Every structure is written in structure tokens, then in C-alpha cells.
Amino acid sequence: MENKVVRDGHIHSPYCPHGTKDPFELYVEKAIELGLQEMSFTEHMPLPGVFMDEEFLKECSPTIEVIEEYIKELDSIKEKYANVIKINTGFEVDYVEGYEEKTKELLDRYGSKLQDGILSVHFIKLEDGYYCVDLGPKQFGELVEKLGSIEKVYDKYFETLLKAVRADLGKYKPKRIGHPTLVRIFNKEYPLEYNNLDFLEELVKELKARNYEIDFNTAGNRKPYCKEVYPSGAFAELIKRYGINVVYGSDAHTASDVGRDFSLKL
Image (tube, rainbow, N blue to C red; front, side, top):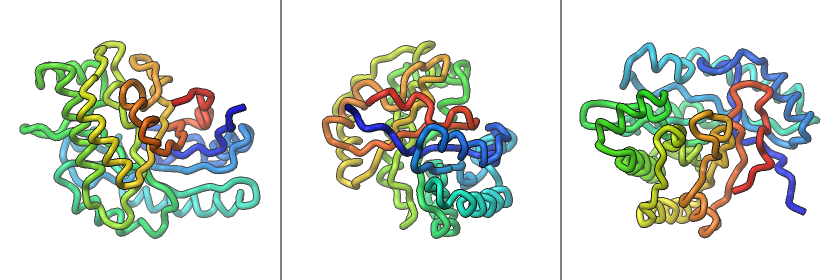
């Protein structure tokens, strides 16, 4: 009999600008109902700069002022449920190429208040600016056209992910990589079986050498153009082969999604 998953390591909060306003208590009560013993709220850390359209970026992560409130309220929630479930305060940290120093400054500012964290890539840097890989199928198609093929978009995404793993972001840098195959979010619309195995293996070897974990993120299974977990395919096989530790994460932006699809396996 396989061990039941008792921890959700990737949950957002009412402070997420693109999430719901479900209060912390609803998330926690859902976790308790499912029999979870531990949960990590990993709200987006404020972005390290204005590197794209400012109005769009406001929807991606909370401001400094809002994140202070997130930490403060979560402290009281943790105290309230201290005898029932372990609750971690965490961040989902965006790796933005070229903004490493500012990201480190933010982590240094808040790191002592965190018990968990995820390092994710949502943005890739091209010669003419930054592009978000999960904005929408139309925008992904424009990115494919710009780079010349779906495979080249994947190449750029995984190159950025490798840079994220190797980046010096200080002592509070998260040691778990979020939704590592997020680039496949529109795979039903832009199908590709990515088989650059040498490069993927280089990435996985780097994860192993640094003792990093992987966010086994079930949110992709709920995305209409994806319908698979992150990671999947060749990357997932390499994770298993190299024995990289995985932490289940629902990536819930609503309380009802806590612990969702945890029956799925790597």
C-alpha cells in the first residue's frame, strides 16, 4: 500500500492578486478535512523590478505592503491551529534573469520569517525584453513564432530554469523548484514531446548535486490546455532515475483545491 500524501507544499492565499479571496481558515479547514498534517502557504514574493508592463505585473504578485500583511496574518493563523496542523509561511520566488541581486535583497529582508519556499520560472528573457510563458495560448503562440519553434521555447525555458538553479540568491534561496515543466501548460494547443535529453539530464544532475527538491505540482492537471502534472514526460523520468525528492503541491488559489489530485503519481 502506497503512503498517503500528508503535506501540501504549494498553496496561495487571499493576498494573491490573481487568486480568490478565500480566507486562510478555509484553506486550513480543507487541509484538516483531507487529513493533511502539514501545509505551506507559498505566496508570490514581490517581483524584483518593473521589467514588463506594470499593470500586468501588479496581477502577478503582491506589493511589499501587502506581503507584510500576509506574513502578519499568517502568524496569527499558525498560532490558532498550532495543535491541529503544521502551517509554514513561505514564498514562491520568481527567478527573473538579470534581477538576481534585487531578488537576493528581498529574500534577505524576509527570509528569517519563512519556513518554506519555492523557486519558479514564469518569465524568460529575450533580446528585446521579458516574456511570460504561462500568460495564455495566444501569447504562447506569439512566443513560438518569435523564436521559430515550440522546441526553441522549451529550450529557452529550461535554460532559464538551469540559470535559476545556479543563481546566487543568498542563504534564503528556496531549494525546491516550482512546477518545473510549466512550459507545457499549453501542450494541448502546441504539442511537443521534448526530447533534448542531454540538456534535461544536465539540469537534473545540477538539482541532485545541490540537493534540491521538485514541486510535484498537480495544477497542470486542472489546466484545460495541459491536463498533466508538472513535471511530466522525459523530465519526470529523469527525476525518478536520479532520486530527486518531490514535494506534492496543489498550487491552490482557492481553498477547494488544497490537496487536489494527490492520488496522481510521478
